[in-house]
Image (cartoon, rainbow, N blue to C red; front, top):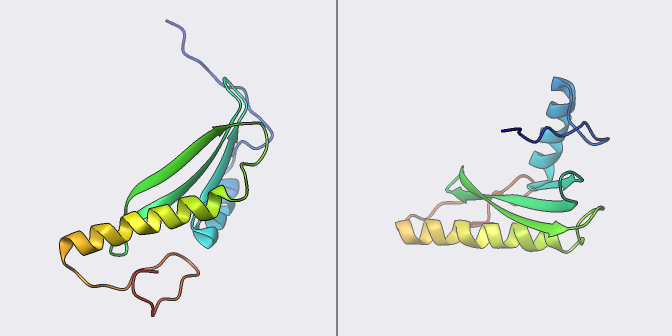
Length: 110
């Protein structure tokens, strides 16, 4: 059986320095955006789901397309991930202040 082996594209991360730059961008924006052209042309936006301050999951939306996803997807995915995070905290009965990078650390939840 032959496995799919993607060829390198223009946006591939090929060095540790490039990976560090991308991870720093993701931390600053509290979400990640990705593009893939093979085997299908798709774009994706993902945001962390937190339980307290710890990332326990991620929420992702994948859409067909060759360019950047609709600019509204980032805020919508982040808001939904934060709502899920609030539910995790509320379900556990804890009251803690949590927030993503750039969030007001004094506010409850976000």
